[in-house]
Image 1 (cartoon, rainbow over the protein chains, first blue to last red):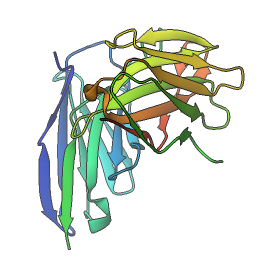
Image 2: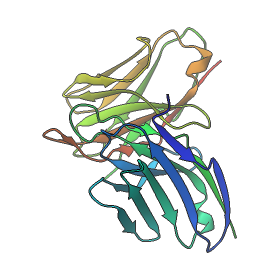
Image 3: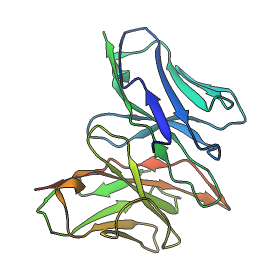
Length: 114
Length: 115
């Protein structure tokens, strides 16, 4: 049973466009929702993260929107650049209480055309 | 700050062999988690070490074992390798404040190929 479902599986956008990646989770005990960016042959790098006490968090061109009632969260990449071409993973975990393992989605491959 | 470092970066082993992967956490971090990432998939949690003890384990067989040393570095051991163990093995480190675990930082991974 997949606890974190990510969509779409791949996305192609033009330079300057907006990239949107969606995730849905099942476990209501999750209280930490990070997004990771991974380039080929590299480990995932933390991009931005949110906790359920806020509905939106923005860092530069990256924004997380969080909908607790729908158990959904999304990543928006504004002014997408070719250097943003990578695989993006959403994840979820409980940040305390002895169950802090990250549960990842299957990833979304983003291609930004120049 | 060197971040999370893993060794080796690549490894080729034969079915049935045993392998040991190593991880040095980011400076100031005391908790190490290991993940397996198959090609085209998201990372899957193997286990987590804190205070030299395995604290939590994912759905992996006993062939997967680990260790954490007093300097917080960690090893992942896999016995009786199967072709299906071929994957990128990722180490992630974080630090614990009481019952709260801070964000995890990943190493570059060890690419294991079993032939």
